[in-house]
Image (tube, rainbow, N blue to C red):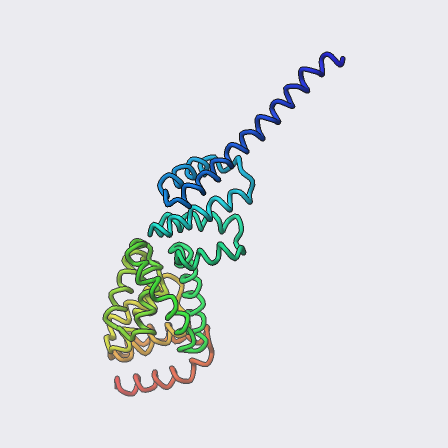
Length: 281
């Protein structure tokens, strides 16, 4: 029985030695790269580290972190921020709260993908804030604006990028011309982007473009996404277009939609209908 175990034990021992020898050899490659870097031979150092990085699964988590950090530092020294950024991103996955990694992130700059997701979250929050209290979402949009300005080129087919820029143009820059262009691009990319149709309708309404405003708000009604404010705007919009008694039913339909969503719309719209009825006699 002991004779049978002897070759197995020897094999296990040799395998153990081989694995640890391979790990030691790998880490020796890391150390030799450090020596090359100290002597200013950055190309040689990076080639050695890159060959090791390809086999990083054979390293411990701590070793992977040290390797990615040192490579990122050298790439930064060479002015290659994009490559350094990828390595910092890898290091962040290993140790997101590491002080060295955080310092490197500041030097590299925020990854666009992360910045874009953050900007989209800020956009959603700003929209909610604006619905409750106009002007309360401006600070969030100010912070997100540079990202959306970049996003419309890097994420040109994403309607959210154009919509985010549109809100920044509306609330931060007061740029109606730019906002209209961005909102139209949003609805071109996503015909069901009802927030964009709403903002476009509000913009046209403010500019006195009654018929254009009506078309935009009607998109929300047809899509089942109209709020009480939109129903009320449609009722007033039709009134401004000079609706006669024969078309009063359509106004009443929108009034009912507004009141159903928020009863407070009732009195104001009722007065408006009365004015329309009198003026149509």
